[in-house]
Length: 233
Image 1 (tube, rainbow, N blue to C red):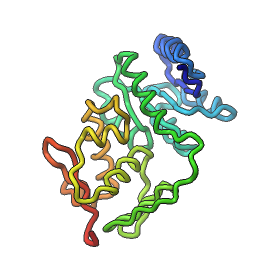
Image 2 (spheres, helix red, strand yellow):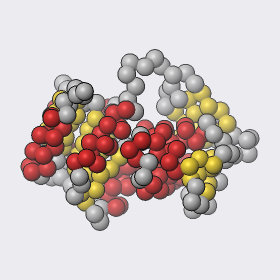
Image 3 (cartoon, one colour):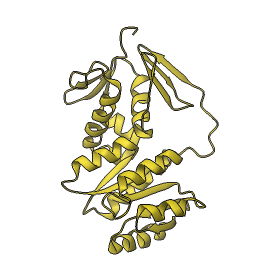
Image 4 (spheres, rainbow, N blue to C red):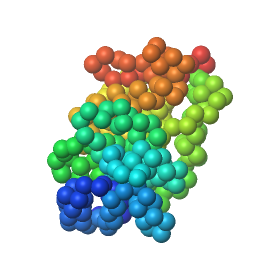
């Protein structure tokens, strides 16, 4: 069954753009391609994608700034393409709102799996969720996608929010790497524990008083993570 949702590919390497256009179109996705960030934003003025795939290193406007601008417009998933050695830039992209990353060179089966997993995170005409999680130092409004820690609102990316919300529903319990990966990124990501290391690190920077000595998200060696929400728990 083909998927007709919209994907915007942003990459200044013509060979990669051609391969992505051919492969994703063959899967039934509605494709638009831009060779830089400015062109991508022009396309988005009258065509809203369901998912964005962007390179990080591009002329005029790089993938970091594009991710920041796209995230300001909406919550569609953003997958960044990085090369080995761009660890710092990749983390910057995640910090400003990217949901996922693929390291070049990559296999198309891997990229397609990441695309499917991220698109599954998009609710199809789902009614507004009004659930509010209040536990310990945290107040998490699932419907509004807002988080307050000790009364202070914290700005999280969509994936950071999903990760925290999943943990917050299981306070005090050790949650396995596999369970977290499947819940937040989909079943295809269950063998990618490096995802968690990156995103938990980013989340700790935002919610922990001292990220080097976390009190809320604790590491359970060889198992996963445990959420301890604070003094009121």
